[in-house]
Image 1: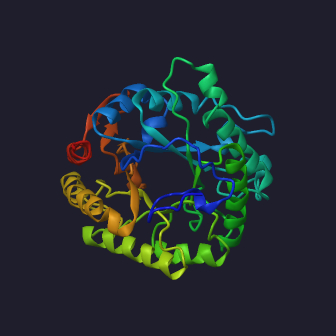
Image 2 (image 1 turned 90 degrees about the vertical axis):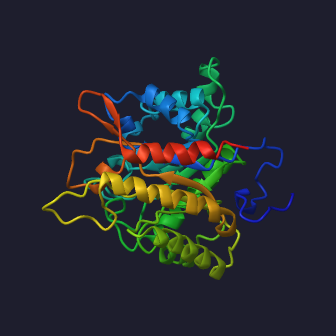
Length: 354
């Protein structure tokens, strides 16, 4: 097997990885979906707008509980349109595979329950890779589409938060689940990348916790969500994450920043979230942060950066993430741009220049 270059996602050194797999493009700037998948959202038109704005990769939830609410085989009705739109636009997809259905949950009545065991989740991932991976049934059924198999899969989201994982501490059970997921994914597509759940807050400590629980070698890519108010502290969080990996003997593991954002939901008369500001300041911080991260990406091993998120409804003041979009989805399906959109587009399109 050829040696991996520093900060190159090489599949974790598995003997099962496919040395002859075709080289994949290396997208850099992406977005998360936000309200893109809401009912009434103009999905195809917005994905085309992403392409025109320099987006190279799109992170989106593939909800297990929606695809497989019973033990019957999963339905791909919700995800097929997204995969088709991304393929037409030549935008890579990063699915976040999350959400236990009641029949497979440790606590069936809790929406944030982890799975009970690992087999059912692993089986769902096998089905997803069999649908959307190389030689997947989706591409056979849609020969008119550019064939763009999904080659990276993110295992859950922020399991250190009760919102996503009811049972704390989480690390031992999460690593067990991820290890089973890795086997399932690599069995179907040896060249696929297994991406760690993104961690927010003190993400460098979460990395250390996962590695102490046996996570080293399970993930091809480590992911963090460097939420903070000051732009310079975004870079500081990435530096601390890189240090945590060095300390754990995994210094060359690639980092993906799967959520970077400032919310524009700051309003008079209410206490803002720590990363909440005004629409104009959101744009200004984006315009500082993305070029800074791009400039330091080789030094820090940053391979992908995702703005959280592409489009939001800007209507739910209880949720600051509902104001983090570059664009706004109106209740009638109309779309408007925020100041941050122009700044993102400027930075993203500049990456296409020779």
